[in-house]
Length: 313
Ligand code: ATP
Image: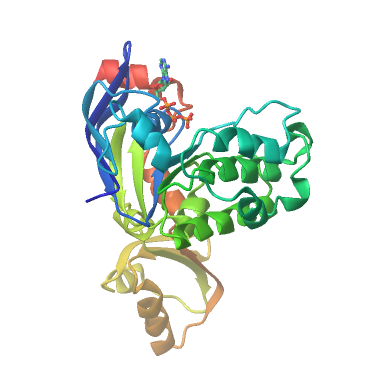
C-alpha cells in the first residue's frame, strides 16, 4: 500500500482551476517534494491531502484513509506544519507543545522532542522572542508531537538564513531516518535536490514532471555545458561530430558547447589529441533550477496568471 495516493485530483475556485487531474503516490519513508511556481496549486493539493480542503473530483488516500471522510483517524497519524504557524506571541515553547499534544491519543515525549530539535534551552521562551529558525524548529516539533507516520511540511525554510536552513534540512533527514514519510512543499530547488527522493513539479495546476530530482533535471535537457578559449583553432563541425554534443556556439574567442553526460570527456580527449589547451575552462552541470525554469511558467508575467491561461486554453 502507498502511504499517500492521489489520483485525478481536481479543485476549482470559481473561474480558477487550482488543481487539474493531479496524480502521484508516495512510498513509506520517502521524502517527496511538491514543487512549482507561485499559484501552481501546491498548497491546495497538500490541503486536500491533509483534509483541510476537499477536491471537486478524484481520490486521495493517506494510509488508506480518505481525508474528506476519515479526518479524525487521519489527524492521529499525520503531522502538519503549514505556512506560518501563527502562534500567540506570549505562548512559551513548552506550552505550545503541551497545547498541541492534547489533540493526540499517542504523543511523543516533549523533553525528547525539545532536545532533538535543539529547543531545550528555549522551552520557557515566549514565541515572539524566538528567531526565525527557532520558530521553524518549533513548527516541526508541533508537526511531530503526535508521533505521526506522515509529516507535511509547507515552505519550511522560507525566510531562513543559510545556516538555519541547513539545520532544518538535517532535522528533516532525521525524521526520515525514523521511517516517517515526509511530504515537503518547497520553492527552493536546492532544498529539493538535497532532501527529496522524488518530486512532483506542478505548473498551473497540473503535474509536469514526476521523478527523482536527477530524473527531472535530465528530462528537461539535463546534461553539461562547457565554455573555454581554445589555444589553437578548432572547427565547430569537428566538435558537433562528437556523439555527446548537442550545440556549439561562439562568444568572441570563447566556445560554448552543450551536451550529454559524456560531453566533458569527449571534448577534452579531442582537444588533447590535437594538443589544444582549453584556457579559462568553465563547466556547468544542469541543476533542478534549470529544469524548473524550463518546465514551468513564470507566474509573475502578466499573461500567465492561472485564470488567463485557463480561459485561453
Ligand atoms: P504559492 O507558492 O504562492 O503558495 P501554490 O502553488 O501553493 O502557491 P495555491 O495556493 O494552491 O498555489 O493556489 C492555486 C491557485 O488557486 C492560485 O491561482 C490561487 O490564487 C487560487 N486560490 C487558492 N486558494 C483560493 C481560494 N480560497 N479562493 C480562490 N482562489 C484560490
